[in-house]
Image (cartoon, rainbow, N blue to C red; front, side, top):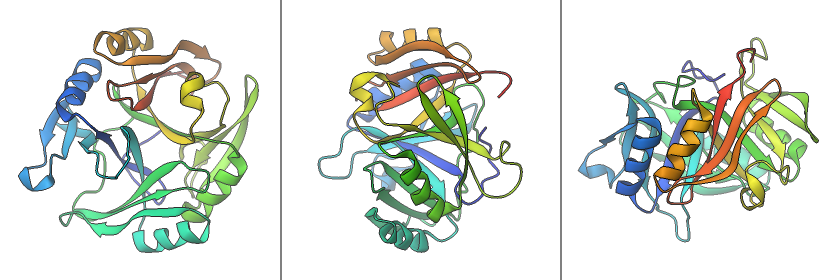
Length: 265
């Protein structure tokens, strides 16, 4: 599971690009209990989602032409410029060249060879998220692409990730972990084949990274999603050796998932 002792390739930041900041902040306050804290007038509307005073995610306006609302998972890099070069060498695309963010770190945004968007964060003043894996915080990052093994090869070249296979209903699931240490302890996410049925047909058509949020009651949280203008793409269901999961969208259409982990994970 995710922690906050970030190493190369760890998910260390998460933000939402939204067409309506006010609506989105109301939604996530109702669903997860998050508070919104503005980063200040110089940040162009960007701000932080906090839980008990700790940053668990962030939100900002859409900045790319033609962009639609989506969650963006950032992975830690010790050298964002070298990561950008490796993305290009591996057949991906650099959407935003590495840039300094108010002295807090270097940000770069990419698209992998199969079309999934992601970013990297090279910490300086801000190391990353302050709380993960607790209730109502990021707990897992999942990649859905047509060719999982090609996806793993691409990201392993960037970040040195390892993977282990496990059998899930109707497919082989690959669990991802950062380099070094016990592989299970270093796990943070997984890769599933596109079209596996997760999230319903509409969500499964697009290669993407999906953030999973740890919730104590998946059914109650999906009800809160519906009650506050979101949609449930995949109703709550139990997955053996994983836990109870569901997929949803916020009012702007951003896809995310819910997980009550199996205690044995």
